[in-house]
Length: 398
Ligand SMILES: Cc1ncc(COP(=O)(O)O)c(C=O)c1O
Image (tube, rainbow, N blue to C red; front, side):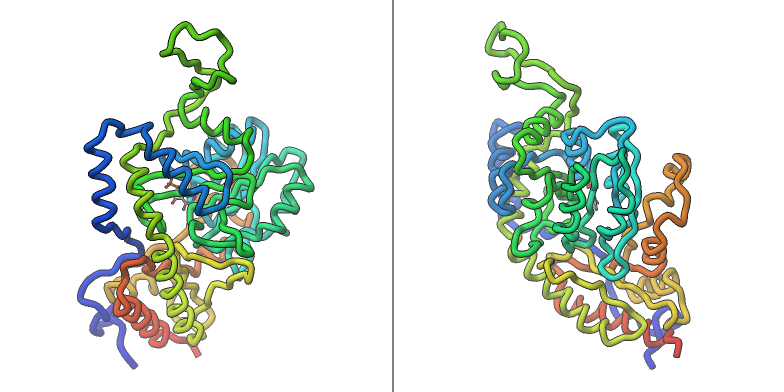
C-alpha cells in the first residue's frame, strides 16, 4: 500500500494545487484595458450591458449589479422590506453574509437544518421554523446545486414570505431546465475570484418584480434618484437629484463590469469543464467506502462551484483535520466550506448556541473542499484523486 507523504511517503505532486483559481484570458485583459482608455470608469455603459447580459443568461426581467455578493444580499433584504423584529430563515452551511444580511436590517437570522445528502437547506426544516415574525427565506445554492425551489416557493407563498436565493455559487446551474436567477423572488450572485465567473469583486440581484427592481436601484446608490416619477420636488436645474431613502454606495465599476461581460462569454465553457471534473471525482470517490459523494437532486443541472469531499468517519482511522493535513503534505491544498455560521463568537454573543442544526454540525466535521476550477488539467484532477485515494486507503478502518 502506498504511504502518504504525511508519514514519510513521496508526495503525489511537486507543486501545490489550490482549491480555487480564476481563469483570465487575453479577451478579459483587452476588455478591461478598453474601459481604462475611455471616460467612464464607473456608472458608464458597461453596467447596463452587463445587466442586460445577466437577464439574457438567466431569463430574469431585471438585474441590478453591485459591488459584491454581500451588498447584493443586503439590498435584496432591504427591497424585501426586512426590518427590526423580523426573522429571516437561512442555512448555517454558508458564508457568513447569508445571515449577516438579516442582521444589517435589524432582523434575526433563524437557522434551519440541511438535507444530510444534498447538504442544501431542507424545506421541511424551513417550514418548521416559520413564525408570525418570519419575513423571508435566504436559501443558499450550496456548492452550486440548486435549492429545492418548488418546495421553498410553496412554503413562501403559503406564509407570505419573500424567497431570496443566495446564488453566490449557482451561476450556470438550471433547475428543471430554468436557469437559477429567474425562479426565486430575488436571486443574488457573487463574482468573487473563486466563483465560476469573476469581476475581481462584484455582485448582482436578479428579479422579475418591478417594485423590487426600483428599490434595488435606490439602495445601490445612496437612495438617490433622478427619476422624474420618483422626485418629490420640482427640479431647479438639469443637475437636480434627490435622496428619497437611505441607501449605500454599492456601485460596481465599469472595469469590473467589462471583465464580467467577457467572463460570461466563457460561462458555457467554464460550466462544461467543471461538470467534467465533478463527474470524474464522483466516479473515483464513489468506489471508496471511506468517502461519501454529495447527492444531486434530479431537478438540478448543476455547475458546481465547490467540490465537497465528505469523509465516512466510521470507516477511517483519522479525523478530518488529519485527512486535510495529509492532503496538504501531498501538495493538494484544500479548504473547508463552511463553519456553521452560529459557531462564530459574534453569533454566540447574540445568544446562538451549538446544537440548533445537528445535520449541519455533523457535515462540518466531515468535509473538505477539493480543488475545482476551470484551468485544472486532467493531470491535476488525477493527482487530486490519487492523493485522496492514497490517504483513504492507507487509513481505512475495516
Ligand atoms: C454563499 C455565499 N453568499 C454570499 C457570499 C458573499 O459574496 P461576496 O464575497 O461577493 O460579498 C459568498 C461569498 O463567498 C458566498 O459564498
